[in-house]
Image 1 (tube, helix red, strand yellow):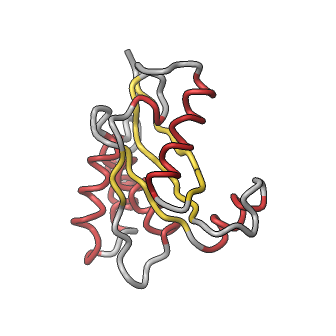
Image 2 (cartoon, helix red, strand yellow; image 1 turned 180 degrees about the vertical axis):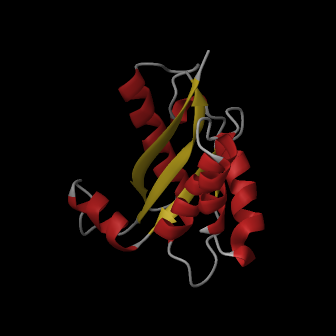
Amino acid sequence: MGATNFERYAFGKTLEEAYRRAYEEAEDFTGMIDGESGDLNSKPGCIEVAIPEGVTPARYLSWIEKADQAFTGYGISQKQKDKLLGSIPDRHQARVFTYANYYADTSAKALAIKMTGRKAQEFRRGTVYAGKPGNVYVFIGCARC
């Protein structure tokens, strides 16, 4: 048994609608209804990440991924780990580290981030949802495979 990180974008008027779409897409992609697919459909649900005021969702996502890499990064030096963690502002570290631990836990719920800006626009452009009301979410985590 192994594990892999996943990142799956979805659109919905609500978090629940986007999660359902992303989950079904993961089932279609992996061909697995339940079990250890290495994707969102291996997770027991999702929790929404609270993005602090003044921070973009894309930046916050990058901090969570950097913290995860520093905490689980086999084969990277302590200097590299310190650099990754040092790139996260002190005032945000406690919460980011909590989310990074959730991210790395294969039995925990997936993290859901409501995206805005360029990342959300890029996703919308490539789908039938361009111009429609609703939100773009990214679901991230580590899942068994």
